[in-house]
Length: 256
Image 1 (cartoon, rainbow, N blue to C red):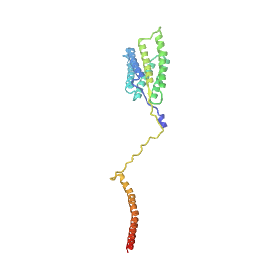
Image 2: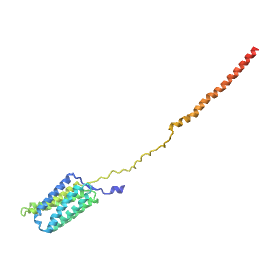
Image 3: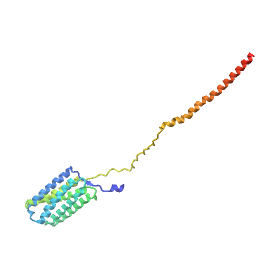
């Protein structure tokens, strides 16, 4: 019983949850921003595969899986999350800043590992996963977005701005999805033994009724009660006959 209680519980999400809806909407907006920001990369086969097709397909699969299988098989979303981590790693390696590349690679590995470990049951709480995506979101906003959009001397281009907003939308959507995760509760276990129903006694069927034995038991008593007055009455009759004979003899002697 104790070993079964220590087993990890499965995770799921409700389709009607606010955080699920927010995650789906944010991913849809991130796809739109990604398509707008990569319009000039359609001629490059490598960029088309890694910067457009890969993130768009992963986002669409995540939306599909969380809506269709979120309640019964949330672990299916691990595949698009791993694909998204690969997209961020490839995007980081394409950049020129080495520190940014190292941070993005480390955070991508950590996020994908924590998400997979959580849905696989190795981590029994959703808050570790949510904390990781919150840290990545803070990095995206504080270290990348704010300096880029606030730099008036060298303003960010439209394409780079859309791609950055797309990345922020993806991370924010994953944070919302992490907050929507719930853990299934196991049924309450009690130490009481299961109750066994009382055995049902089936009486054998008989032709004679059960009350038939009663007259037989009372019959000897009745015979005894009937014989007892007769036994007492017989001596009284004999004494009366003797008295009658003696009276008759006395009358004969008086007549003589």
